[in-house]
Image (cartoon, rainbow, N blue to C red; front, side, top):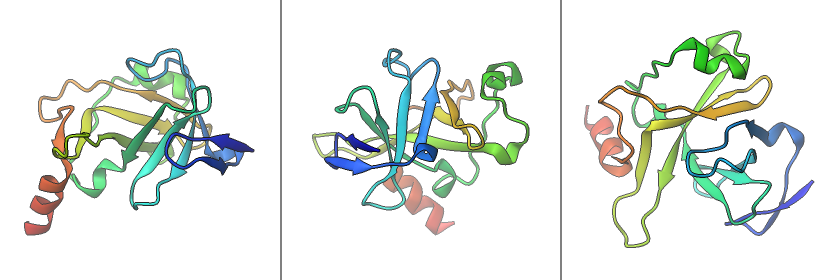
Length: 147
C-alpha cells in the first residue's frame, strides 16, 4: 500500500510495518495507526501516522546509545499488548530535532513499547529519575564511546 509521509513523500509499505497504539501518543491521542519506516539516516526510524500524513515521529533504539537503559513498568500496563515473552518486545525512544540547531534529544522517559508479534504498541511513562524527556543524543553516544 502507498502512503503519504511527512518526510519522504509517498512510500510503499506492507502490513507488517503497521502498528496500532490504542491510546495514541501523549498529546496525539486521536491517532492510533502508524507505520514504521526506515529513515535515510541510519539507525533512525520514522513512526508515520496513517491517519494524518503530516504527523510523524523520528525514533531510535535507545539501547544503541544507552546500553544501561532499563524499563520498569507494571505488567498490568503492558497487558493490552499481549506480550508473552521479553523477546517479543521492541523499544523505541522518540527523537526531537530542534529547528534552532540545538542538541538532538531522545525521550527516554516516554518510550514507545511494541509487541513485534502482533504490532500492538503503547507509549509508556517511566518514573525512574534517570530517564528524562531530553537526553542529548550526540553527547551520550560520545560518552558511550569513551567508556
